[in-house]
Length: 432
Image (cartoon, rainbow, N blue to C red; front, side, top):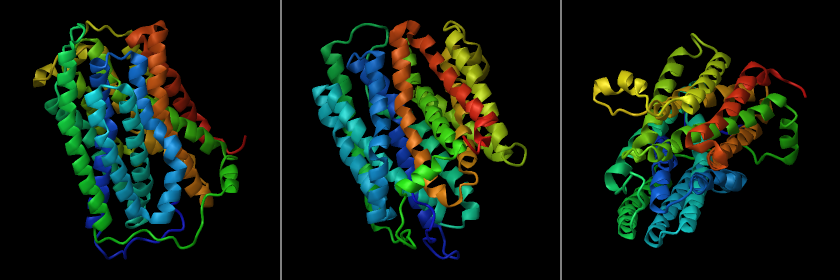
């Protein structure tokens, strides 16, 4: 992702309201598509009678697209521009959403995986286009504020989408009985109308991106991340270790957000498809606290240390907590009319709070002092999003290996330990 050597998209005096509206809508769409995984995965797991490992492939196929499409997306954006890139990304996602219709009618996991992969390609193109657009639409001094606003929109989508999905789809029984074919057909048919609506909505956003009266980002000169620049960037340990930290962070973020529904399904909780919203709510609280405290009261390094330590503690509470205990729900949910949910399930949601400040803290630490290599380094960090494919697969393998649905969450502990290492030492390393 090239963000250096670019001009502002508009004079400073020009209002950025319309560009912010465009970018905000793109981030909301990204949030809707990304966090819908947490609702669709347990739904398909039940409808198609998938093992935990097979269900993990639904999430993994979405995130592995970053590895496949990351570099081609950057080349595409360089050729067609950022506005057209946003339009193309949305168009690919909208077309891919239509694949869920034959997938539902045929009830074939292979078609669902193909749809997930292609919709992941579309979101990768959109990510590659919209992130630099946000940075360059106005003064770089205020870029961090704009990035925070976009992050909040993305996570807010993660709060509302599971509720919308649950409202328009029909879930099967959750008491452990095998579904009849008639029940499976009802579940499958309930997916058709929502995905037609999703496709139509994203096509509208594609048209908005294409035809909105906005100038595009302009390159001052033809330059790209050469192999030499990549090799030079890889000589910086704090960057390489930061890419690994991003990959492991995305792995635990996706586990917390996208597998909580499957764990709720395992516990027989009827509203399993809305569980992702609990994780997203905790992330929003973490974002808000971080915005208030950093950097006035807390450094980015301190925030990363606290995130890693709290992640380790909460992950252990998930693994060793009792599913017959409801202490957290009785303290935080039931007094306000909320449901009574087991402690380990709510601890998975609380991991969202622990995860909230990892991404914002790792990026500046990993990019520190890289100068002209910042653009190349940013592209390498973006590729760390592919870690989202790793987390669910590790969880599924751990589950199948004998640890069980609850014990499998122990795979998160080494991830947080590495993030703690990066916070304490890794980001300070300037030579191998």
